[in-house]
Image 1: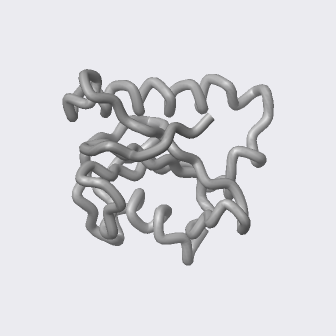
Image 2 (image 1 turned 135 degrees about the vertical axis):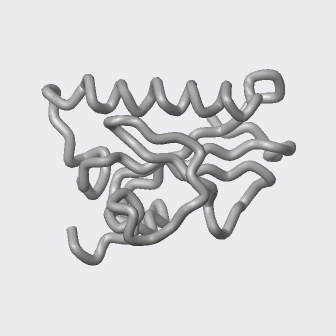
Length: 114
């Protein structure tokens, strides 16, 4: 998609502070971090949200989950933990209509979320 900021980052048209990249996704530090560690993991396919995937996409989505685990290990987040968030749609405050996840860590995140 021509005007998608994440597509532009993936194509190298917009610079980022890259943490990780493979065939399924690219991960980079968020420019407006909400925690001491705030990494965005964006799918390399332009799909608006998790609702745009089907059963045949399971391996692709699984690849992103494996990448998230690898990134967490690379950043040393295993001991104290981290949160992975996917905002889907307007009410969830999804600001970029491109499938992406946020890895947040580096401090107490308050009350538990179930």
